[in-house]
Amino acid sequence: MILASNPLYCLKPFEEVLHMVKNHFDGWEFLAEKEHGWGMKEHILDVMSTVDTYVQVHAPFNDINLASINPRIAHTSVKEIEHSFRLASLLGSDVVTVHPGIYSPLGRFWTGAKERAHISMKRLSDMAEEHGITCALENMPNFDFTMGVTPEEISEFIGSSGLAFCFDVGHANTCGYIDEFLEFVPANVHLHDNHGHKDEHLALGAGNIDFPRVIKKIHKHRCHLVIEGRDMESLVKSKGYLDNLLDKL
Image 1 (cartoon, rainbow, N blue to C red):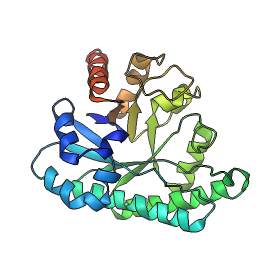
Image 2 (image 1 turned 30 degrees about the vertical axis):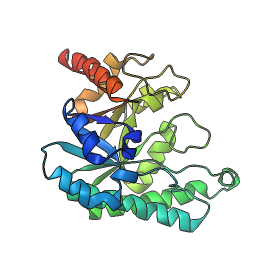
Image 3 (image 1 turned 120 degrees about the horizontal axis):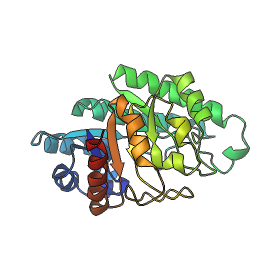
C-alpha cells in the first residue's frame, strides 16, 4: 500500500486534503496536529465515515519532547501522543509513527536526557499495546539536537521499550546509515530523497538515494510505503517513480 504524507497538510481542513490524496494514493499518513488533531476527532470520524480510504497516524511532534529535562513536559508529551493511539484505534488504523526525544538547550548537558527518553518510550509502548496499536519509532536526520539518528541508538530505544521501527530512508541518507537500517525490520517506511547533506524532502529520484536497491530490499517486509513530499505535485511524481520500481520486482 502506498500512502502520501506532508506535515504541512495539518494546517488545511481534513476533508480538503483527504480529497486530494484519495485521487492518487491508497491512503494517507496524517500528522495529528492542528486541524487533524485529537480535538478534531469527531469531524475526522465524520469525514472518514463517507469514504473508503485508509489512513494512519503520525503522532504530533511540535512542542513535544519525550526527553524533556522538565518531567511535566515529558509526561504531557506522552499523554499527547497517547491521543494519537486513541484516534488511530477509532479510525481502524494499525500503525502510529512517533519521533524520539530531542535535546533541549540545557538538556544537551544533562546526563539524564536519554534515560528520560527511554522511560517515555516504554510508557508509549505499554499504551500502544493497550489500544491495540503498533507504535513505530522513526529514525531522525542528522541534526545535533535529535535523538534516534544512529542505528545503535534506535536499536537501544526499541530494545528497551518494545516499540516497532519506522524506517525513514531520507533521514538515514543524511547521516550515511541506509545500509545499516536496511538490516532492521520496519513496521512502516517513509520515502523521500536528498543529496546526503540535509533533509531536503525531494521527490524520489531527485537526489542521490539508490531507490531501486532500497525498494528491492524493503519490499520483502510488505509494510506500508509512505511517500513524504512538499506538495501534491511532488507526491504524485514520486508515486509514479515508485510504481515503476515496484512493477520491476
